[in-house]
Length: 271
Image (cartoon, rainbow, N blue to C red):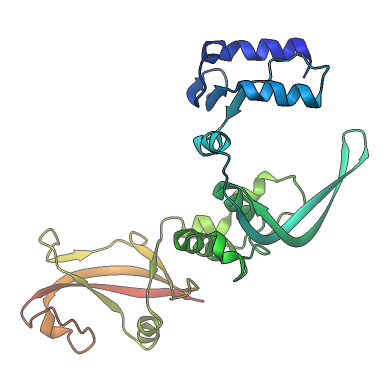
């Protein structure tokens, strides 16, 4: 960017020149939320590196508050993991050649980690040693998203170019209305042996009898490790007394005449 262009660019932030803390700024032209602040020490540091610059280098523009506050407090996140890495080599003017390798890498925001998972679901992997850099919630999120991306057939990118067809997934279209429920391995085995209903706690707003239209209420069932096992469709539900199902559904908190909701289903697919 030339000096003149840069100075014109700065005019949009002139009203923030007295602000030394990240200030929310909605850029109407670009429809972008930014966090802007000025820091006088950067002028000194940059002038040491480039004595010929006469730009106003104090301005900071961040697209998220985490990065902006991290700059002020000199702290950042660190996430370490393995995934495919795209290496770009210039072979001519405006012409590049991409090659890939799988290796150990890192990111400084969780969004960057998720972005790599989305681009490289096959090769993305967090080792036991690297789990220390993630919270329990983050690990569960990444595990479940990866399982789903692989389930619908997503592949690693081989270059920076992403064809729009990648985002028109046939399996996602098939399952986009299905809920994803986690059942225990024991429960899944019982279903595979013929059990065709689920028992739920009763609430007053449940109707006595209800039928679901074809395709109205479907669910993908995953096991304890988030592996996809079943695709089911609920057909109808009714309310019964606990004693009618106590042989297959045990709950110490319920008495024989307590009400429970019984929801029946049929298996559409097994995986």
